[in-house]
Image (cartoon, rainbow, N blue to C red; front, side, top):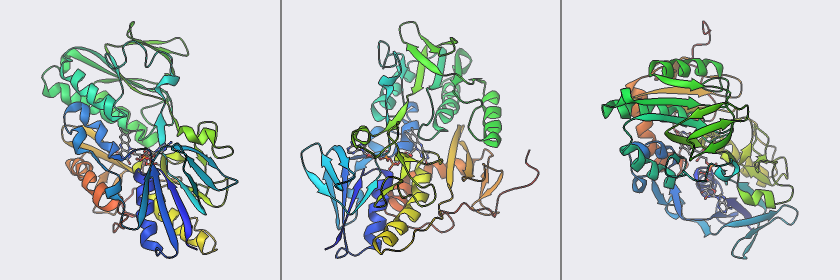
Length: 414
Ligand SMILES: Cc1cc2nc3c(=O)[nH]c(=O)nc-3n(C[C@H](O)[C@H](O)[C@H](O)COP(=O)(O)OP(=O)(O)OC[C@H]3O[C@@H](n4cnc5c(N)ncnc54)[C@H](O)[C@@H]3O)c2cc1C
């Protein structure tokens, strides 16, 4: 009988895993089923551009089914729970799927209702998020009429998807209001729970410098306890208050709700503990985890999901064959950081190495930790790459799982 592989989630990780597995395993040896609650695959990095009118919702959404290669079954249904002892997935429509191998790829979900007041009065009037399609579209309309006052961009707490996206929002807001000729009338503030602009010291220094250069005020170690919409202020747990005319909030993130209903599957946040180098879950050997759903010390980012995918698929093939697993995922992550005025920065790092200056992927590649037009073009091109190379599971020469070191400066970096 063919091995029954069930993949939960048809987003970035679920789709690329299914396509890579289909190429690696013949249909006679493995059946592959992908489950997702809907048939709308959102290119999430595009959400950053929607509020500024630089892209539109219809340009960043495609049907999930069409991203999956022939020979992969797609089930459109919500997941109710997983029984890890019985090796079954219970769907909300009553269907029960049996599996030999399970891949958890259900990402991270936004839980704005967990922050007092966030979804209360003012939500979608003066308080927005750009982290989903509804919020990003509503914010576009609100920004278009905003010509003076104080915008506060706030991360409620970590972990969040793409930790640089709120910084990119600040940089683009600076560009957007300049372009509209009202920058002097708009204050931009970035309030973060971190002790700097970003998590990694070297990148944090560079990004804090850019915020200052662009006149964006940085408020650190701010833990949002309450969003007071009518009073237009964020209230921190330490009693500090941050007034706003318009708040752009990145809400708390958690694992998908069904994880909490699946005894023994997840941690207290709903993420699934996994070995950080093999991506095999710590819960059961036949359960693997990819992307934002995984509790591993890597960033929650599409690039991480992409790089994890190569090792994960190799390990599922090895697991099915009864072989020992490949432990080569090194935490590789990279990210274009849009900085406005048609420029972007690029960072590349892994579990052991923080972002360094230099070039990527080799000595004559894109500049690292430095603004450039080339990086901006890279950021724009990434959408094509996402639909046509990353999701179909194509290998990209020079850009693979292992973090390249050839172009990186390793000395003389303070
Ligand atoms: C604003 C923004 C900007 C970003 N920019 C970048 C960037 O520039 N670079 C980068 O690398 N990354 C970026 N990311 C992050 C990137 O999009 C994610 O890290 C990546 O999509 C994670 O892939 P995933 O497969 O783990 O999760 P997802 O792609 O989110 O897929 C999870 C899937 O699970 C499904 N699901 C969840 N629960 C259930 C359920 N109960 N039943 C059925 N289906 C369910 C969902 O419908 C979804 O399709 C950004 C994210 C955001 C929000």
